[in-house]
Length: 349
Image (cartoon, rainbow, N blue to C red; front, top):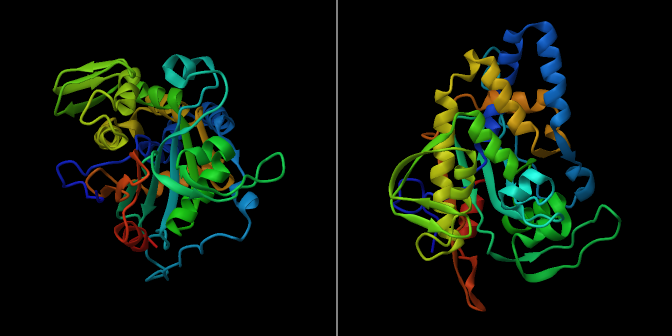
């Protein structure tokens, strides 16, 4: 199996949470409409929501090189980013908190990276390539530093999503950098509750499915056709795998791709700039369940990123999955399909 772009019949595969990036850039305009006092309170509240992890300090200098900056063509031109940007976006099935447990997070401790994608933003932010990494991929998990001191051992043939389970965001980033040889400039994670709240704050999302879905695990039952989903239903769709196709993670990624495309279109059509109350609800939903690296741990930094993506839409975002094939040791797992996988990552450096 190889990665295919979004024009393929079944190659449109991506995780469900990249829409959160664009939302953050709309916060400032709405806050200003609210008035100085309310804007100050809203800014403080949203800023206080954000949690962060100092990934750069934890990993040090033993990492892939940063992207090369392209010189600006003119000092008088509109200021646009002059370097590409790579962001690891994880959707975690966090089990902390009552809301996450009710939405399927499981027991009261631990979490896994339920969805993972590398978002590559072109210099100038005219387009993006979003690469989904199947969580069932077998990889060499590198030694990762632990917050308590010490480090994990190198693990060969480990499940990709085990990196987050054993070493949190730091190990997830290091594993992705080891797999791709691409430096992750930023890290963004959103959990079950945050995703469901985001969809509800946007007024739901409209998605079309090509086949009936009946998944006892995600508790989702939908007839083939177009449906307007609330947050809980959208989350169930993003988690569905056993009720469609061959029940593999690759089938679920296909559904997630449709969902995130629909969310990007919903954000564009929601009129957030002219509806500060809805804008605040959306921003609060995103930031209250958000964990970032320390380079994005303030509302100002998230706004700058979001504003640079203002022109990005579902039409300018190319979505692919990392090329994989069944693992020889376990047909229920996959491994990178070479040289196609390496060629894909090389195209993003």
